Length: 167
Image (cartoon, rainbow, N blue to C red; front, side, top):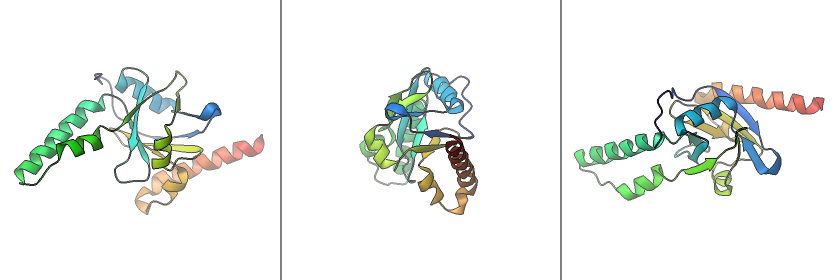
């Protein structure tokens, strides 16, 4: 897997609309970090394990996930708990590698659109090792723990609507 020598983590927020030919755009700030952490133009996407959103990251996270799998197995062994390594590996490594072009355009696979409840808008929110990809409607349903993200997303949506009215 690619080395993430300069990768500092994902932070900030961004917004993208469904474009022509059914493509979304990975915004520049996230695109550059994915390139850095993947050694190229490969975006890894999966369903968030608990939230109604998707997660995105670069290929460099593969080794981190392998180490996480080992830690979880070791912890289960120490606690004398059952651990199904195959099932947990399927959960961690079920992400999809999605290519994107120089402009960040990529096609979201249909099953991820369904799992993430994705429509025509995407809100990106950095969480360090990865970032979340939200349908703004789903994010708006979150608790007040997500107040900052909800407000940032609402601003992006309002800005988009204002631009659309000016056209």
